[in-house]
Amino acid sequence: MHSHGSNSPSVSRQVPGALRGNEMSTAAMPHTLSTKTEPVAPWFHTILLACIFLGLTVAGGIFQRQTRAHPQIGGSSHIVLYLSLIAMEYGLFRYVNAGLARRGVTMKSLIGGSWNNLRDVLRDAGLALGLWVIWFGVDKLWTQVFGISHAVSIQSFLPRRPLEIALWIAVSMSAGISEEIAFRGYFQRQFGALTGSKWAAVCMQAVLFGMGHGYQGIQAMAKIAVLGAMFGVLAIWRQSLRPGIITHALADILSGIFGI
Image (tube, rainbow, N blue to C red; front, side, top):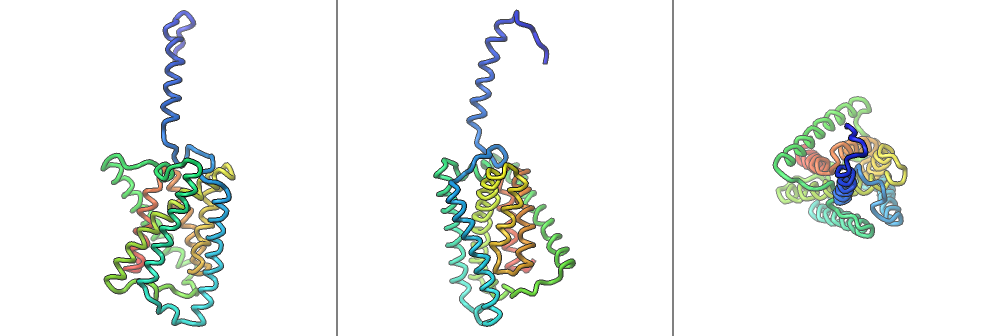
């Protein structure tokens, strides 16, 4: 940038105005995952939600023990179970949204804006498919290295009939939306504000994500934590939760219906 000295008053008068214009445009931009380090919700709100997921870890251990002792537990109604899961995911979404509202943060800004054109949609769909392929490979490698988990299987809870399959798709989509918003959005932003490090935030939310799946056993918890870290990195790189939401829902649908 070349300097024209102090004998150009028109330039010196214009620059501050230009700077003010840039500041105004920057202030008007929506905050995304990488541009805001302040908490997005009150800390008491976050602590309570974290305690709920830690409670799920304990409940998962109890589930594993009870299912080993009473295998008939797996024969309960799939439809009731799926509807309950959808209600829980919706409750999670509403809880996170209530916390954001207390800080004046919008759900749109937490997710990372919106799609503006078909190119945006195709890009995120491509990223989602790529992440799913990577995760599929990691899952196969994990099984080869650590073997098959000896935890009680959740196969008996997977869909078999057409209505169950339809409800499973609804469960998968609601989980993809609410859990990505909660972990890669809400918790990752909160932990980032707490530690001042986006990478520490990725690790912390991933561990909590894995612990929330305690009903699948310890080995599955560790594997799911790795998955959570991958999703967290993608959210930072893309500055959006949308690819992760797509991958999360797709992975749940394929694993539940086709065993992939």
